[in-house]
Length: 427
Image 1 (cartoon, rainbow, N blue to C red):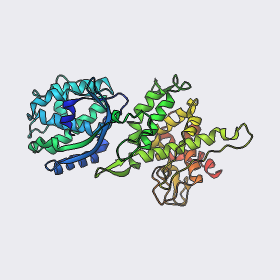
Image 2: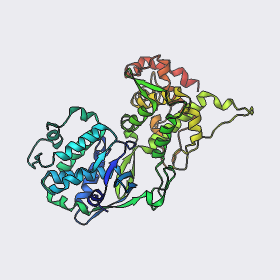
Image 3: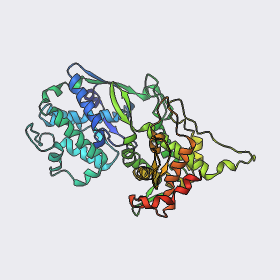
Image 4: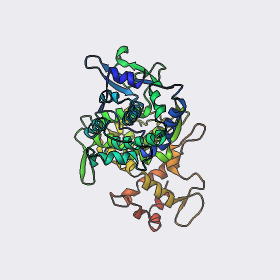
């Protein structure tokens, strides 16, 4: 299957539950470079993009991807670029069958972008970025730039133009970019998150599993009406989490990203780093609550926060429910910590040292970046020890000692660090 055949047969709808387009994020420059370079290298002989799967409504002829959203969006932008350059203008009607429903602004932008085919002029010699040309169009609303999907698409279009402005003829072979198309309805599968996602039996990643399960938890009867306040605006817990997990929080974790390879292309991913940190915070909140002391049998009920041989958390969702469901304060605590990763890192740098230094706490190890020890555990290395866990949590809880809900770098000035030293020495 290729993109042209798929969109010729079905309307492709990216549903509301999907995340924003990510391959065009400014932080994903390496991924864009790898993808576009791979296309240039292999487009003449053929490039296969592995599996794309989802559900098909045969009555309405609508395909809703469950996996493959990012690749399909990049292929859509490549086809738009070819059509906008005057090649295959007849594709315009077919490209109208590609829709995003994640946000109204995404839907409107894509509609306007396709409508512009035939009227927008793209020249090889123009010094102006393609995104700037698009934003100068009368149909473009400046508010769309705040939509993560729209802004990411503009970045990707700039990258496509930079790569292919002088090689437009090579893109006439876009149909040689293929993928294995699987209609999950053919297998009569349910929406259970433990479904095997393709013929090789690869399940949803733990990170995707976690996001879906945690969103469901935030919609439970005990939490559905709870809110999180940021900059005087209240958000439902689910909406706040769904937005942040795809934007700001992801950005905060990029320095702890790890490399993985999919379909021969190497990617940076923060999935494991985020999951390790989430499980660590959950462990700290669990023991902080003292619930393990409240067993009806009179015996201690202590959960074992397990990790596998690669240092990845074996998350027990019964424990996640125990820590967060019905406990909005714990969720608020988690959200605030995730919002302040950079500030916590700054405090670690200002407070800890690998050797004796005045007004710093020495851990007598060069590996004193405790955030990295939590997030970047690798196979064959020892996980963060209990003492380091407690020291890190003491640093995180400095927010409470500072008696301020607004952590800022100013409160971490060196003259204040002696106030938190007694905590470390009492561990």
